[in-house]
Length: 413
Image (cartoon, rainbow, N blue to C red; front, side):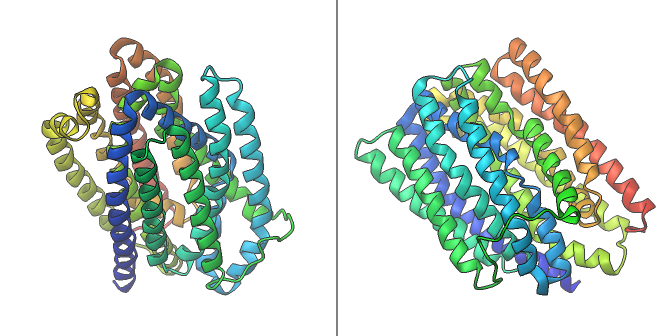
């Protein structure tokens, strides 16, 4: 029970920090979207989504292995970081190069390609920032992650609102985003080294015990992006920048539910690692929290269904009305996604991340063809239909398979 309380404490810190930072960011999001309009906001979203796709090349799965290894032996956390930072740096620089080269093979306008090249610098700072977060998660000092969430949002929103109000446009907004992300990374680096000392210039090392599970987690990230975050990327090719902007507004709203879900999973991940190393859990505990997640999201979905369109028009204006129509449907994918929290977290804590890899792979294979078919038949709303179908199928499979493996291996009783 003490570890559950500690997990809830971590979750409280992450949630409080996230709520504050998201509230600040939401104000900036409304102002930016209204000032730029669907077309220019769509270009801004396209640039961000394009960068997001190439995050899969940064070897992001390494973070999970660092957390799992560090949580079991925190005294040697510094050595784990020294052994991994070289490989992490190599993948980040490779991702930036591939991202810039890939942009030349798109049908985007030249200005959009220039924005992508500039924004590639954010891939560097964001990736290392997430890498440094591993230190706060292992030491269970997640209040600092919350602090840096708020710090980044305040600086970004203040500069964005100031520059846009002075008449500067999208180019300046791109520079502000890159600058504030770099500032967050530098501050986080200087602070995190006070908790765990490591050498940022450690040589490149290859440790199979770290690399193999990292590749699995990274593969999970790749199929996760394809199955969950490729929608806006596909719209940028299938549709217009205005359509990207319209769908992006709905996507941002629903993304808050996904972010809260991931924060909850992050808070309990190190706790479950330590718990499963000592004993098994009652299966009813996992089932109870799974059904609780479903119930909460069903209620939220019903409320959103009836009021989303009016709220969107009230906040953003008539030109974004279609965003509200999409939001009333898209929100229901959170029902199945929240049901997986106890199962995916337990699976990763017990080295069963292959469950998630299999589930996301199936979702990825479903998502792309469904997006093509349903977009061609129903337009933007078809992308939302595709998301609901993909998540319902994938999450049911993930929950059933996770439960089966945990039961067979004796992790639950």
